[in-house]
Length: 326
Figure 1: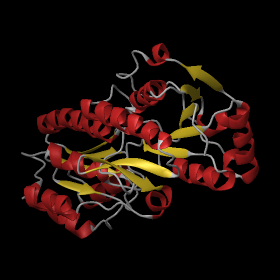
Figure 2 (figure 1 turned 180 degrees about the horizontal axis):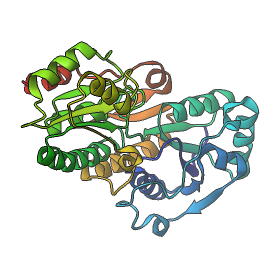
Figure 3 (figure 1 turned 135 degrees about the vertical axis):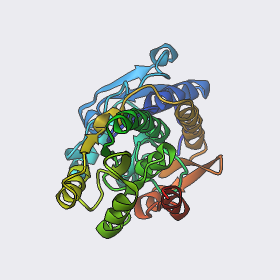
Figure 4 (figure 1 turned 180 degrees about the vertical axis):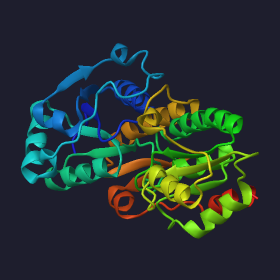
């Protein structure tokens, strides 16, 4: 591989707080290493359509604290085809972009892996997703902020729950993974948590509610991941209401507010570390890898591993919720 002179960066999939901090780090690390940096707008679709602009240091000033992504993000059906990826490779060649940094999740890395295999383009990935469900890294960019957002919301819900002796089912994001739900449940002192990874035992849930919740003198919080197999917060709340029509039950769905907001200190630092490490990896002739963090150390994880393997919930944390709800 020849010397890298131009590095492109794009964000793909769902946005996550801290993506801008990662973009900033990639751009400035590229410049530090004597390279030109190019921002690719609207993800892989923007790459196919040539939505590309050179970014200089001042272009990424004052963005480290901003949520979302200045490069925007979009899903691309066309990029999933060999023909679409060939178009993308031709655009990179037209702009003489030698290497690419992709900030996103497993779907983004799947596309990146195909582009490497089919066109031998050096690509490294930075894990940017609030779900924290990528194998090979202890934390993904945006996860810490999303959990803090959920915690703040649930703390406020607890105030009104206590004032009216209500039982609240609070739904947080997590279609395929319960990491946000589990951390939020522990941090807010919730009485129970329902996650996609564990089959919901309605008998156990009913037992907890009947034992610990008295509609006359207590309140309760149950955290539900949106992908829970019970069907989500509304579905489980309806089942409990049918069994206990005397309960004052409410449902609150936090939704996309968890994706927004200024990134936490942790996410800003993590994004900065991974952005610089991504450029360093490219300058060291690395490709088809994700940069992650394990035990506070930067690690290189092959795309194959992070795509194929599943990241599991910590069973000790699941037990913690049950122990602390007595």
